[in-house]
Image (tube, rainbow, N blue to C red; front, top):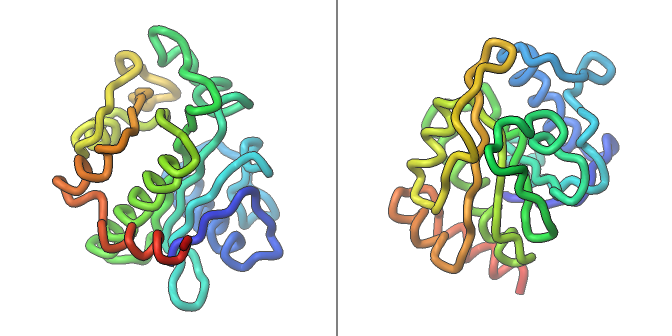
Amino acid sequence: MIVISRGFTLADPLHVTMFADRKQVFVDMLRWNVPVIDGRFEIDQFDSDLATYIIAANGTGEHLGSLRLLPTGHPHILGELFADLCDDGVPRGPHVAEITRLCLHTRLPAVARLTVRNQLITAMVDHCLRIGIVVLTGVVTWPFLEQILAMGWRAAPLGPPRIVAGNRLGAFRIELGFDTPARLATTGIYVPALAAAHARRAA
């Protein structure tokens, strides 16, 4: 099941498990220096009513994986923290969103993690095309950026990689269009059956 929400509340068990899993992944495993709330939740200054969360949940409503979209007309990670990764300035505007915090449940086996990732990307592409987002940006480690560039969509680095706090990071730009689902389907990323299910629920 995919859930898309604008903003969050810790009264929602799905959001609770999402932020707890984010803490496990980004703080406990990856050792990021990011805020932790109540010793349990990874919630930063960009988690707000402006953020959109795309969440994959299991049958009991618990988090399996998620990602966050931030509007670039407001403070966001690339613009506020990593603007020097962009040779020609940070892409911004009402039709540009930033992808952040792709988080997959660590207890899932590798095949299931890949399935959840593809579900999230499928839902994200459909959601963005539906609301008029035509450009996606983000900051990731360079090896992950190379994976993103190979997924099949129109994507390119915004500048060369740079070492930041011991990590080789890069920023990217993805162009979305009517052909994006088909391009991603050729590499197995976009899941047409899931997209059809979304369309039926929205009808």
